[in-house]
Length: 549
Image 1 (spheres, rainbow, N blue to C red):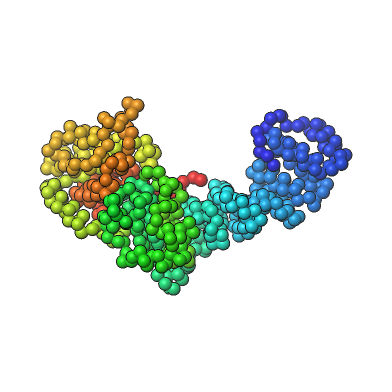
Image 2 (spheres, one colour):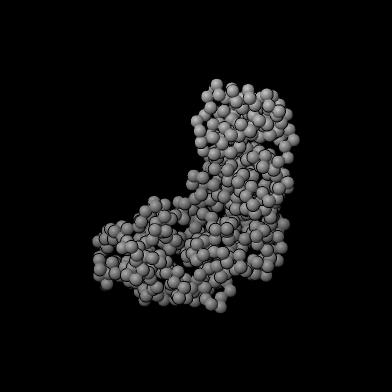
């Protein structure tokens, strides 16, 4: 049934009866009544369409097209129960139309019947493979947005398991798992479906670990340096709760690399686990998702479609590989730590651990600096720091960064100044270590506190004078990483060094909308009273399951 906007007023009862009388005496009254019902539905007069279809069903209850049309009208009126009853009858009466069965799959899912919905969807795709382009995601997303998040997740899991090469199925699974509602009912159902009883792992994960080692290959995401590190950290959390051995590989998708470098991660950090590429290649004979193959595991070809600093829109966070049997999974998409830890089995040590402590454990245990980098940072700290030091991170502002903030607002320099004033007034000996990518921030801090109280390093920075536009004082280029004339490895080393130097200070003022500031909080156990963020920590507070569909 069409859902067009009404182009005429609804029919009066008298005129509707006249129409009906004229149709019933025609050569094929059922077809004529259904055609008129279609017209009324197209005009937006669903009540008249429903009355006509009920007459048609009463006159000839064995015609499946009438019941299919009834299901469509009931769904348009948001009566999913009657829509499902009508659509089931259409199916029983022998309907083999793939679009009819697709609607039945959606209605079964909206009714919470994931197994029936999956069976109908698979049958639809068998009969009409061309529907695979959009049908699976249509069914799953419609179900999730209707609030049936658990049903949607079960349906997506079924699609991935039974149709692993189906386009869009891993994305649908990631979408639904990340958005599972946290109601008491859903939690009980999740435990029943994926729970572990007394063990620290999910059932398939536990069985897989008993057979042989298994792995997660964490590819780059295509964004800023510390956002890349957080991408690695969140997927390392997944590796921990599923018992997989992690390996981080930054190929050409990562900006921060030297010209002759193969794995850019190992320019800055030691490997996160004692394994090598050959071991991963052997495990890659069976890999999830199927968009990756043993030949492309370390290739950058799959990233050719990604714009600079845009993230990988087609990437799959490792969350979608929870409780899967394949020995190797590839995590090339972002997932928030809240969404990963929501799936931690109750018996796992992390089940009761605050998120900030999970992050700090990962940062201290997995992110081990290369000795040459660590030694250079220690030498800088010895040269630059004496007496009490307050680290201040002032990121250049842009509308994109403001949109990322949980508050949806700009981070004001006055907030940095107000907190710095309080701490500097309390200790006249203290100085500020300013890390920033903004030339104007350096100038503003020096003007307010005097050059003697400011410690800062020579860095690549955004210049407001050169890049501002429309008189708004916002940088046209909001991240120096966009300046491709600057060597990527040098940029990465600068922002890494600044963060580790900040962690050697006594107090910290930062911006929770920035990965740099959030990373600094994870590099040591800061006392709460020694940290001030001008905006909330997005890496702790953000999670998809709190976001309305």
